[in-house]
Length: 391
Figure 1 (spheres, helix red, strand yellow):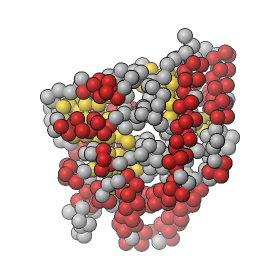
Figure 2 (figure 1 turned 135 degrees about the vertical axis):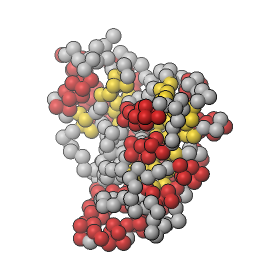
Figure 3 (figure 1 turned 90 degrees about the horizontal axis):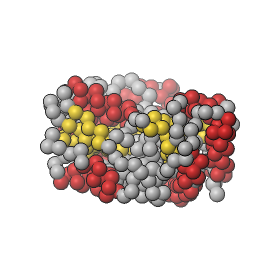
């Protein structure tokens, strides 16, 4: 049973069956009001908010985030999105000809493109190692990944929760193996904060990026980049600005290089403490558990309808509040628009190489009725069109 009081805290259009929190989260009212308050302060006295008080306000926000994800405050800096963070890393790695970045064939498409761009410039290689689906165990997943290892591998890049396939990967174990082999680890945790527990001190990744504007419910354009102190010197600023050879250094080159970049509205970053407070006051651990139960309990049902199979065992080890079901359609974009325009369902239908998947996300405002609405819509589309082929 979903909490009706919490449902009412979100600003989403009630006429839309919103099953896409994984792409873009939604701010609850207290967080959005905090966002507007910061924006009002910015417009009423921009010099004071940005130039005078900006560094201190940002540090206070980072302190709340650092406590939430268990890292040192000056080891994490705000960025607009994980793609920005990965660009900082990829541009700074100083790849040489023949170097390899080991990844999987299930990563987020924008970041595949990022690595391809920088690898091509250096005549290096981005290795999209195939991972066998459905997953059967984390040991087999790890075995599949490290089949792509070579003596040219420089770093491992992997998502903790994949985008199109919505799978939780065993990144702590992968980081430990990589460290034993002297490899850098770069983790895309876009879907992790506020979704499943995150403990960066325990994980021991070299670099980690997460989005706060998904499951942490903050305004759009608020994410973070974490770097272990030992590797921070590797990261050049993506935008060279006042933090380079700073007149008044903060004591952390990492913060100076990546925090202050001229005039920009960083109000979204300053809402992080309010968002964390909202999650804690509303027992988000229990909320997330309820959402996982609803998400997972419907997974096989949708696979049966579409004539496909789950991508993994239906357990918390591999799945959170999202499930991706393989779907046989040659026109995923047309199907997605039909679901939205006719049935008023907001849900992604995504291509992952040759496969197509439909992914629903479950947040506190979602109910069984929302998934029934999706089920009925897909049933009707199967019966009345040729958009979906059921074996």
